[in-house]
Image (cartoon, rainbow, N blue to C red; front, top):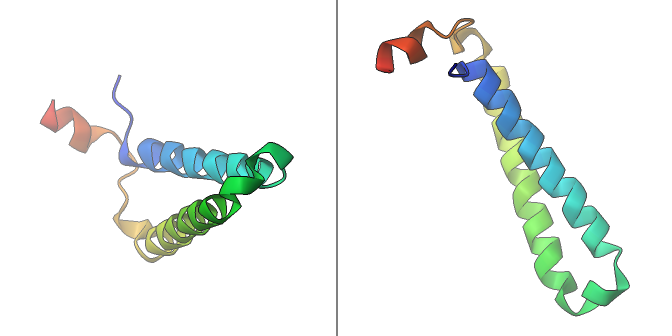
Length: 75
């Protein structure tokens, strides 16, 4: 069964939050101090995507269909 737009959006946001959490843990890992600047950059990029995604979904909340009917038409 295909997920609807809302389901895919929630899954995407969950993946982004998991990536952010993983990066935060990596930043605290002494063995990864040599790549600290890279991890900080990745964390900022992930946070920017999350912020933009949340802003966009808040702005377009009424445009997200509540059913899978659009997906079923495309299959």
